[in-house]
Length: 100
Image (tube, rainbow, N blue to C red; front, side, top):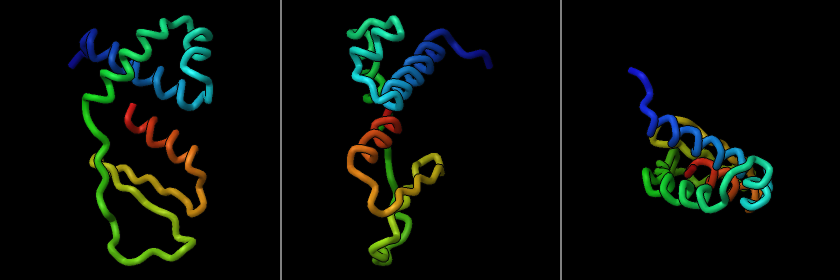
């Protein structure tokens, strides 16, 4: 089935938002570099966040070892392994990208 214009636009903005997170640039700098309107960026980011929350499932109820890290299983079956000692900023960036 062909992708609708609305679905295509949504997918494009999801990619742009994820790219901004990966770039490490502020929204303003990213939008300037990409020739995007900053207000449009914020509007799409807010709209896409409302669509579907990220849901997590507990994988193992045993107490983890101190060096074991963490594994998240997303509702689609994807697994995200987070090593012990990951810094908070990196984890926030990853989780923000998942929400995008």
